[in-house]
Length: 338
Image 1: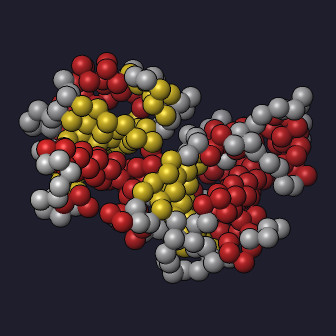
Image 2 (image 1 turned 90 degrees about the vertical axis):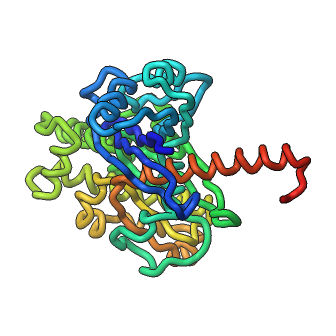
């Protein structure tokens, strides 16, 4: 039966009506798909209802959400979401029997079983894919990451809150930025530097350090100015973001021994791909590490986020349903295979 699959970020929500295809758990068919701006709705139930009103002809009773953040009881908790998400309220508002939730980058990692792994532009390392754990990392409204570990039945996915790790400056300039953000010391997360809002923060900090008033008010404006080389602080802010992303990615690649490669996801990075390729990303990904020989064999691609989040969420949901059905079958037969 068709079900809703939604990828809810801090800025955009991607919603689809999906069903399993004849290929089973790995086959997912998209019946309808839309992208919404979260700021245009006062709560998630209104956003999903708008999709249902526009694209769903028959009642749906099941929904899977890929959300930035983690589930705490009945609520999805994350500072980057546009509004609180309360699962009971959502279920009642839409008349759903079930709302299943997973992390948004966990969903992207499950999408590595599908078209996500086939696309993307090569950034550094070998340009061929190999076996081993694979990472999906993406700076957007926040900074997300997940790891896909190969194994039987498609392997498994490890979700993370890696974007909340302490930022570690590498250059003198980055130390100046960090000192401005935390003049008395203390915690500054990586995502406060490596994200869309982080880019704007770094840009404003650089302007302050130079005694100038910031002229640009959005991450998109900073990105456009950097691409056009029309603002020196915007150019430097993007350089700091790219270099810091290299350090962050190298750290995670070592943690997970990501010999299968790294996918940097999101339209934000795609829009600055040429700047990213010319930046210190690769140097910082490899530099000064005893694991340099390993990391030099890790391929890195930049890929669009697109519909991959809802596709991965749907794959996870169908796999979860099949696992539950298998458990019930074993319980009914006393654990004896049919």
